[in-house]
Image 1: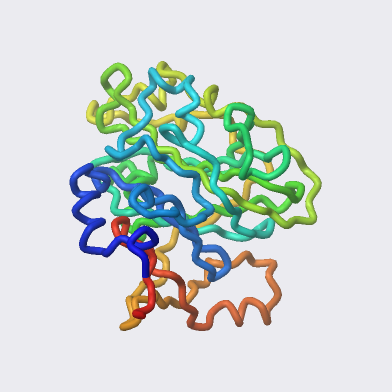
Image 2: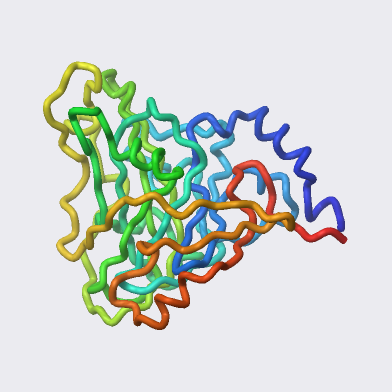
Amino acid sequence: MAFSNFLPSIVLPALLSAVGVQAHGIASALVIDSTFYNGYNPSYQWVNPPPTVVGWSVPDDLQNTFISPDKFSTPDMVCHLGAKPAGAAAPVRGGDVIEVQWTPWPASHKGPVLDYLAKCDGPCETADKTKLKFFKIGESGWVDQASDLWAANVLTNNNNSWLVRIPEDIAPGNYVLRHEIIALHAAANPNGAQSYPFCYNLAIDSTGTANPDGIPATALYKASDPGIKFDLFSHPTAYVIPGPALYSGALPVSQTKPAAITATATGIYAYTVAAHARAAHVATAAAAASTTLVSRPKAASPILPRATPAL
């Protein structure tokens, strides 16, 4: 195997450690209907050629940083620093549940989790991110005041994963899923909130006809919004989730812990699809088939390339 096509796992961890990419976590992959889809990984910058994935690339984010409120009006707010469209799209049906997988997220970084969709004018692989208009399909903020449990903590507790359901009534087509955590641990300070948006291309198959209105990501929030300028440690009694109102056709989903993932001797990950991984409208036979043991490419670690069989 040519070195240009594969960097040994002993090299990539050292490279990524040097740039500190595990500091906060990244949205690294999707699981849809028992199929695993790689997102973007900073290690791909040392792989030639880089793999084609469904996650938008973030080549400028070597320090795994964030978008601060003074940058909310810039194109970086769309899908992160210098984000570029993904080269592929993950197929999904209206009503299906998508599992967004993260690398470890620190418990101290409390805050809301938000999900948006934007329909592309043509393939999302060639979309102009500044022209995408997003509508909100999911939001969760302060889940339990008594225990100070936030949506980001739920994500951490659930094997660093988050579930989002695709609305059933939207028209079929190519969409960008914008998935975001806003960390509030420094949000009492001016421009202290930290936005971590990540994007994925979706090809949505649906019988719906709705084309919801959206707004550019650069207009989603303002630095003065009560859900952005927020003192997490001042004994607040309420929290206002930032951004536009939730789309009327948005579908709720229970944030339950996904099935455990175990590595096999061959370096392939095997898992059993949890009951929540399919929408309720899926036919019984198809749902039964989805609970069988399947394999997916190894990508749970943010610092390792996809497993390759020994030559």
